[in-house]
Length: 137
Image 1 (cartoon, rainbow, N blue to C red):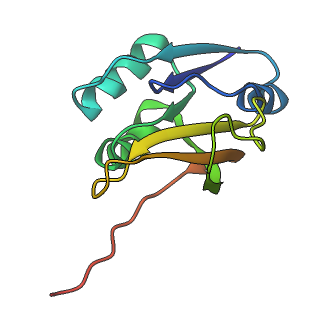
Image 2: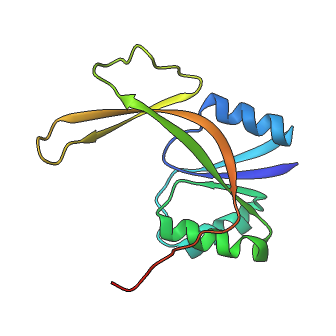
């Protein structure tokens, strides 16, 4: 049985669980919702739970490190691809589907107004490599 390590303060959506079931059949889901101080701590956690897959909602620098270490430690990093539907004009949003949607609350830094961003899960993608392309300024 495969082990999926879910590192996020957010619970997985029902559609995400269903997608994992379709791909992996039976699996063990280990959820970690507490903050993680370093990418190395995330790798240590993955090794401790014997994760086959990691689904991280972490800073990009952590994810880059996880992807670069994945083969060495025998796990695969997955990214939950979410489509932005809209900013909701009212709550509850009439278009909200609890099976596949999430709404993230934030604040407009200029006005202080609350913003509700509506996202819908599309798919999981395997992260094989993350590149930073730069040029001289």
